[in-house]
Structure formats: structure tokens, C-alpha cells
Image (tube, rainbow, N blue to C red; front, side, top):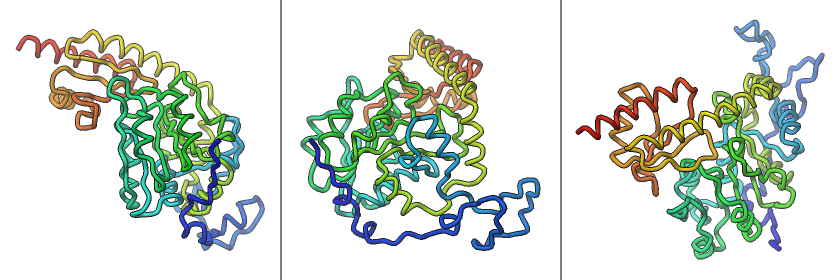
Length: 361
């Protein structure tokens, strides 16, 4: 069994630091109190109909965490909320990776910010390509690259940009054997039939799961990322985060959205239905070489001609997709988000017309 000691991989300067204690960490915004402690504007803001904005937000997002706790059946003490998932990734690097000493392992093609934020922190990034045939983890290569300075492994499942689930048994195998932090990014988990490991978080003291309200909940503009981990890890994240990282309005709107689960499931059902419609329709178009299996709200589509040219054609038609052809193992591939039925019909019609013109040439 993997004997995991969290303190052994936390940076010394983090272990020794005294956290900043904000005014709202000492006293939350209880009703009927006169708050003269945080140098706020006691007369209110120009937005008089939203006068509460002159006060700082709850730094620990207590009410929002309770909503998420009820939704996911996870204690609030095991939930951290970040200003998007990118803040969470940044905090993980700051806690566990020593600049110019430690390394992080990623599995390209995958979410680019794992590498970008790692480089910002001066951490060596080890890239182990997913298997070319089905975009799965290469466990044999992982064994060869692991060393005493390997502190973090990032796994994205379902994976971006490939769209597929990573085999659960492979993920659990890594978590059990690795003596560092495994970050499992489940941003797209609500679109997948594969189970989330969030329910098993107590089994794995070295696991941090990242989820988000940006994708299936449709709240990308609010920037609310979710980390689920042991209480000990969550305490360290709270210790070094910026004091007021999520605004009052983001917290309020997110709470309202989480109370409307019926609409959430209605939209989710439509996305899954449209994903199937797009898969079936795109496969019938001659220039489409392959539509990869997807457990997300997007499709990775391989074109048998230049994906760049098709991308530029779609731009002329006012359709914006993502050209992923420069990414490893994604040669001539476009990543296409599932839109509304009207948007998807227009997209497919334009690709079909482009294909007919190319065949005629």
C-alpha cells in the first residue's frame, strides 16, 4: 500500500509561512452587525440597487460550498473553490513543486494550462504521450520517467482535446503507486457515463479532483473551479489562496443556478442528444476521416484534407471552431463544441458544402 505523507512533499517555505488573515476570515457578514473592520465604504456603492457590493465577499464561500456539498454528497471541508480551475492548478504548483528542482508529468495531448502554469513556476514538465491508437495512458513509459523529484501528475478525464475517458483502472493504479500528488481533472465528467472518483476521495490522500461550473452548468463567465480533496490538502489551499478570490455576484448567481437542477438536466440531455446528432452527421461527410468517441460537450474531428483550410472557410461563414492540428497526435484535427440544434445544422451544412466543392475540384 502506498504510504503517503503529505507534509513530505509540501515546499518548505509553504510549511513555514503564516497565512494572511483577512477581516472577513475573523468575522463573517452576520446580520445586524456594524462592520467597521475592513476599510469598506460604509455608504454603499454607486450601484444603489445592489448595495451589498460595498462589502467584501465571504472568503470561504460558505453558502455556495454547502450547495455544492449537497449536490455532490461531499463534505464542505473537502471542497475548495477557485477563480476558475486555473487558480486551483496554480495553487497546487505553489504548494507542492519547488522551482528548478521538481518535475510534473502530463499526458499530451491534454489541457495546455498544466504545462503553462508549471513553466511559470519554473517546474520541469515531463511529457508522456497518450497512446496513438486510442488516447490512453502509457503506464510503462510513466514508470521509466518517474523519479524522486516527481511531485505532481496531471490526468484529464474525460480528456481535452481528445474527448475520451481515460481508463479508470489505470488512473487508480497511478494514484495507489505514486507518492506525490495526482490531479484528476474532471471538468467534463457530467457528460460521461464513467463514474467520478470524487466519491472515493477518502481512499486516496494524494488525490485532488478538479471539477467546474463552467461546462455542464453553463457558468463559464462566473469563473468557479472546484477542487475536491482531503481536508488536509483543502486547508493548505485555503492557507495560500488570495483572500477574496470569488466575487459576491459570482457566489450569488452560482447558488441560484445550483437550485435549478431541473433546467440543468434538461440542458444536459439536449447536449448529449446534439452530440450524437453531430457524430452521426459528420461521419457521413466525405472529407471527415474520423470523428473520435466523445464523453464531453465537444468532438475531435480528423479531416482528410487540410484542417487549417476548413477552419478558415468556417471563419468566413462566421463559425468559430478550434484548429488543434499543431497539437501532438492531433494532425489535421478540429475540435468542435456541441452547439444548439440550429447552430449544429448550420455547421454541418457548411462542412458538407465545403466537402462537395473540394470533391468537384
